[in-house]
Length: 70
Image (cartoon, rainbow, N blue to C red; front, side, top):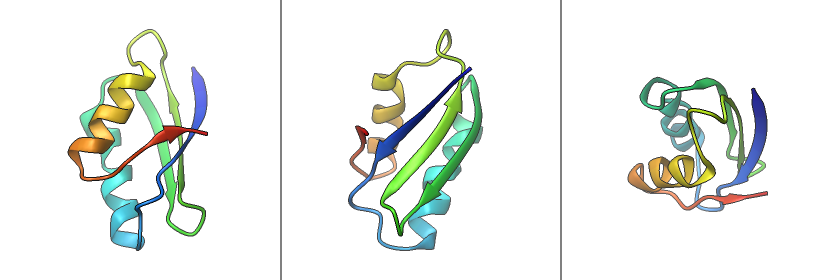
């Protein structure tokens, strides 16, 4: 398991954070996602053999947000 932080500068409220955290159900290999719109970042714990940074960034983009590895 790998724990990684991504910056998400366009989160503006708790609903944004909840949308990001909902990716936990959509992505295979995710153990946990914690998103904070105060910090404009998310911490994701996932199985790196099932999921790549590019897949995570693409899934966040589908939700309407921009993400970059911190």
